[in-house]
Length: 109
Image (spheres, rainbow, N blue to C red):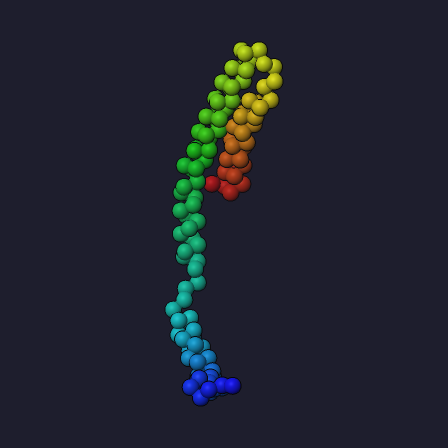
């Protein structure tokens, strides 16, 4: 069934390989860092970008509000009383402004 040419993995080889891997893990584990410095750096970077992101959300909200106002005005001038879909643009404007404000106050940025 098995030819003599096939190599057999003996128990001694498995133990040797496991011991080598354990020593390697211990060796590289000594050089590991706790990660606090990286977490603090990421926290600082995210907080520095947050003001610009909030201003961007306010700008997009203002743009959506203007688009919604124009759409509602056009529908009313055309005599269409169903402005529900056009008024949804106002809802998205309010949503963006509220989300930006809540996130800003929640995280204390």
